[in-house]
Image (cartoon, rainbow, N blue to C red):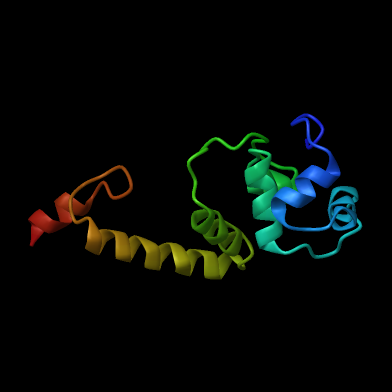
Length: 118
């Protein structure tokens, strides 16, 4: 992926703020626990989907090029949670969204119905 982007290990390592040997370990799978922030920086620099970078699953190319770093951090945190906690986080996020956006939207199609039922 790095080579397809035309980057050397040295250049990518500099761009993401790590040393070339650390990047080499990440690329070879020898690094047991690279930080989430480092992986996010690599994914962003290579325009890759962070999930693909972490797991090899899903879309290789990031579909949403305008995703901010804080949004990517939330995604990685979410994916690191057990399923039960993911569901709890989704519930709370939906609750916050419903309070902020009480009208119907693609993310909240029933809000208008619930609001008008009162």
